[in-house]
Image 1: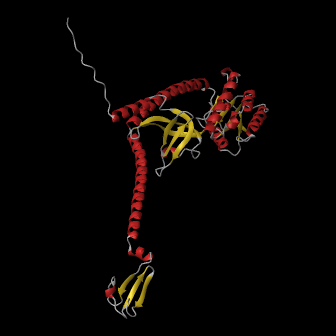
Image 2 (image 1 turned 120 degrees about the vertical axis):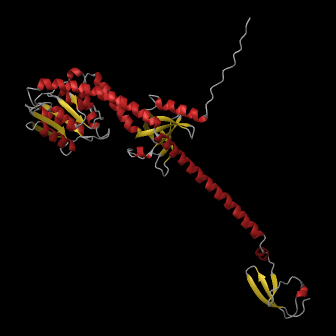
Image 3 (image 1 turned 90 degrees about the horizontal axis):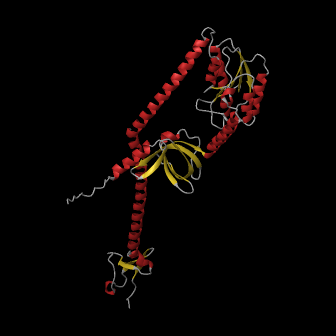
Length: 410
């Protein structure tokens, strides 16, 4: 019978650098970890002269090291500090020099803003369950509006943007402003009253509800359920143009059409100006919008993939790693220099104490004296060095005394 010998397989052995690079590649290519929100409490916060932020996010059971580069801090609307609860967005990576996984933050906000967003989601879910946002409730916009009502602040830039756009696109349209506050505790009631007032006009064709951009707190008046009910109760279609393109409010979902900005709302309110081309242009517009949306989505996906590849191979990652390493090295050098100076200062004090202990002045302070000839300055240490009427000097601890030897010394 034949027997075969198979040598044992050799294990795969990484260098530390190779394994670190592999870990970083795993973290930076993970779909979740490269676009993640984390909530926690700030601790060990530091901001060296470089301007970068270094801190730890922790909760009751775990902690995570975080870095926020100086270029990302300009968008912060608050001053981070230890003990503060925040929600941070960023991407996970591995810091080889420190041997630790870190969250590289590009956006951060206090937890309070996140709580407002959760309240927004709860109200949206409740109203949606009531059918307030149902697609079948959305009314089509008039093709040729002759009278448009606007609900916004009379002093805001949104009104001027809307008026300028309407004059450019449809100069003959009649515009009626129902002024109201669009921010603050009294704003929801003012918006509801303005909507009711415009609906009392018999020849009104369309309403634009608008305001400029702002934080979630600034736009909170448009997340009031009374505003949503008033929009749905309107007898004419309502276009919402609240905030910027990325801002969504309850009013946007309740409205018959949501525009990304006040200017876009005015454009959507005046879709065409010729009856002969209405049907064809509307079809072309829908087709182009769909095609453009798909093309933008495809290009955006390609751009994101290219951006991720570029970031992984960009020297910026290595530069940022060295920046953090430089900060840590500077701190170690400062600690080492402080320790070195302390040690040598202690040695110097010891040498001073030893010198003082063997100093002749220390002997004089104990009551002894140094006697010398006043003329030759020769020290007198024996009796046979003296003679009657000899001038001498006596060195004491606090100075010299002149004296004369009188008579024989017994």
